[in-house]
Figure 1 (cartoon, rainbow over the protein chains, first blue to last red):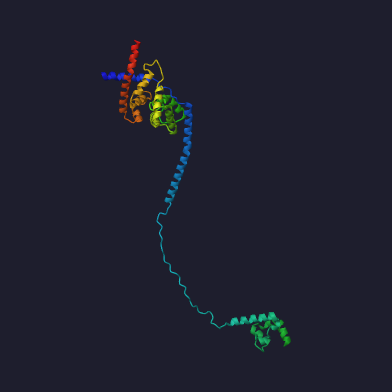
Figure 2: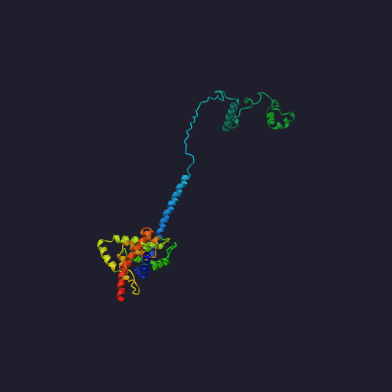
Length: 171
Length: 173
């Protein structure tokens, strides 16, 4: 009974106090709003460097991660292989032509070149005579020459007009 | 409650919070320090800087105001503190309304005479509208402890306020 009465009295005190209105706050509303705007703007401006640092950090971590992932899967191994050095051997080859031996063809070619040089230097007089040259049989006739050349007799008349005419005239 | 849900802080919400809780917050800060307006303004600016609405903004504001006001009071020099205590007694805590059955000045004096735990809980509950659970979060105690301090404080106030009222009634008769 006494407790209930006490509770009721406390509620009365509570209601009486609640009717009192706190004194007006001496807060300058305009100043508060201005400073709140400044604080909000500062918060936004201060956010940008933080975001930049965060982005740079993430980019660095991503680059490091990519480098780490891109490394070769197997470890690098060094393999030593012994390679034999090629040995230079002297091979004795057989002589192509025995020393001091000259082929007949080379002798004939050398004679020809020598004769050509003499003709070019001295003229046609450098040519040896037929008899001394030994082209035909020495002392042979034209008929021997025709025969040696294998020209049949029916062609000899036409073919022989140039040399044979002179020869026959000489003869 | 003005801002029970979490929402971004804009000028409209800030203005509404100031209208609905500015006086009570100032009264709450006034019991600790001599510059309650600065403390309350600090709390609102901190709310803006946090850039996010707190789920229970009003208890959050009371907690910030309490911590800031205690910090300001502790940082004052001893000599200044003594002077400001005298000055603080001259600051009206409530608006004078002679129609009310409780005298504003007497109520303020009775509140000042209470121990701080009882006083801050009574102010937070009656004029701040906080629940005992919220008050426990603000002052750092359980809701049952807050309720016990509240009841003890009201009993003391009833005793302190009874005599003048009785005298006033006697004189009236």
